[in-house]
Image (cartoon, rainbow, N blue to C red; front, top):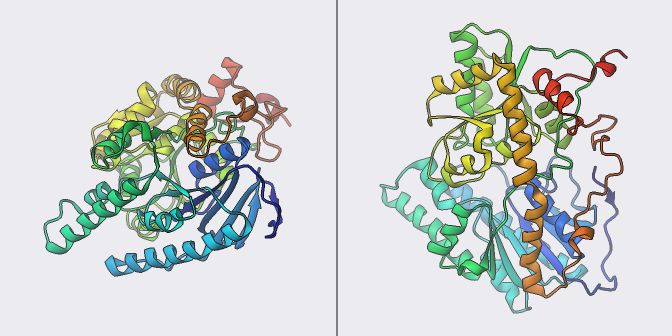
Length: 463
């Protein structure tokens, strides 16, 4: 639950604690889960935190949420082609640059953190360097690999120019950064090898969920509307493979005659409208639902009610070395999942995910069907998934590593970790989702029953 307050006016007495400004262009905050967790970690460690990002639907231009000051601008029109993307980046860069002046007027900042994509805010960081401002590069994506994944090896002069331009922007971002935050060891190795950064200046902070709050909740009273539920959570861009989910559904529904399965696709992106048209073309409207942009409560609802999570990302130069947040979010909800066999997905999922060869739609459908038809296998994998994400991938140790980056830059004294990241929840069973209750993870028999049935407790069903 977010607590929103009125925006603090300029002219306040500045605190002695350091002020960190975080720049995000890809998503609004707090919708960007990783950035929001970073903000919370800094606030709990005594930092003043501001964020500049685009507006989401219905967002106000100025907000203060849970102690974080958020400055938002109207997002650029949807881009098409090289010229369109260039205009989008220039527009967003200029809006962001102007808002940094507003942030500085309210309270000078000591550190700028820029989250990519795009790799364009190194120049803004250099402009602020004369004021003693340090720069942290939080690398969410490898843009040169993204180009190769979407367009293949550049053969034309224009494509080679675009690719070299992306490499140059990334190189300048690395050079400007005082510290780099990487989402996994694969990204760190590229920052060291291609970016020339010293290993000591690159911190690996994985995008693990806060498993105290991201955990399964009991569904609303009543029976599930359909016997088996599949779910996809994430962005719907050309590189995300969501079209393959539709082809897998076509295999299951039309090819194998299954009428007991339904897929819910949570998220949005450049391919959203095309995917809906493809759903109609494949005669799947009855078996596929698109939710659009999903908030925290909607995500918890669907991931708690689903039987199988879907990870359709193909093995590409970007996907193979990227950490897929959806994999860990499925795991946090004790949700078994199927994925193509990617290097970093294996690092995250271990033996709690079923892997199939990249691009093999039939093998993917086989793995989904195997889970649907074997309740005990779903239970075993769901238990492994929840245990692994809580014990090895939880956000709390990642938050410690993240905050250390800013301690090194600012000299701000470390707070006691027990005070910094303690669980403030008084009722372990009461969730952040209204009157819904968390599944009792300590009760193994109840957890096993829930993973198999994905239904309310027996007592709740009787009311």
